[in-house]
Amino acid sequence: MKDVLKKGETMKIEKIDFNGYRIGIPIPFPMKYVYCYLFKQDDHFVLIDVGYNNKQGKAAWEEVFQEQNIQPSQIKTIYLTHFHPDHAGLAGWMHQLTGAPVYMHEIDARMMEHVWGNESKQARNIKEMVFEHGTPEVLAEEIQKQMELLINHIRPIPTISIIGEQVKFADREWEVIHTPGHSTGHICFFQEAEKVLISGDHILDKITPNISVWPGASQVPLHDYINSLQKLKDLQAKRAFPAHGMPIDQVNDRINQLINHHETRLSVMAEMAQNRTAYEVAEEIFAHKELTPHQWRFAIAETIAHLDYLSIENRVKKVIGLPIKYEKLC
Image (tube, rainbow, N blue to C red):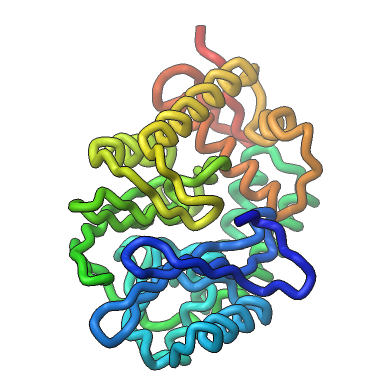
C-alpha cells in the first residue's frame, strides 16, 4: 500500500496477522494516513488508536463498519498508544458511538487533559518556549494560533481509564510496554510467542518519529527515546506494525537505523552550536524545506530536544538568557 490519497479514497483496510485489520484513516498531514488496528476478541472487537477528528476521519470509519459488516457496538475496548491528535482525536466520538471504554498510559491520560482540556494553556506555553529559544515573535504567535486550532480536532475528550501491564485481544495475551520518547506516555503492544509488536509512533518505516521537548512533558525525551529503543531491541521482535508507513520485518535493523539517525543529527547539531539559539540551528537543519507554523513547532521543539541532550552529555553548554543559546564545548 502506498500512502497517497486518490480521488474519492477515504480509507485503506487490509487483513493482517491474527485475523486483524490494519486500517488507514486519512489525516491532513504529510504521512497521509494513521494506521489503526482492529482485532476480534471472543464475540467483540478491540480497537487500537482511532485517528484524527474531522469529517474525513469519521467518514472513513463509517466506511470501515459498512464494508466489514461491523456494528459499532461490537467494539468493546479502545486502546490509545498516545495522546497526539492523529491517534486520539476521535476517541471521544468513537466512545460515544460504541460505548467502549478508552484506555491509555496514565502519563498520557494526564497529558490529554493538560494539552487538550478546557483549562489548557499549552498553546501559550509552547509559544513562550519557542520564543525563549530565539523564534521570531510573529512566528511564535502563528505557532500558538495553529496549536489552538488543533483543539477542535480532539474534543470531546472521553473519560480515560488507565491501562494495565497486560491486555488480551486476538485470543492472545499482549504485554503493554511503556516506551517514552515520542510522547512521555507512549505505549507499544508485544506478543511474546509470535514476537509481534504494535509499535504506534515509536518505530516507523522510512520516517523517524518526532522527538521533542514540550511543556509539561519529559524534558529529556531523546534520552527516553533511545533507552526505549534499546529496551525494545532486547525483545527481538520479528515484525512490527507501526502507525505510519509499512509493516517492518527487520525490526532490530530499523531500531539501529533510528539510533544511528539521532547520533548523526546530534553530531551535526553539536557543530552548529556556535553561540546560537535552537531556532537558528533549526533554520539551518531544515533550510531545504518550506515549513508551515505546524511544522516549525515540531522542528524547533525537536531541535531543543537534541541540543538539551548534548547539554546533558556535556557536549555543548546551554547558556540561559533571553534568548537561550547553545555553545559547543571543546
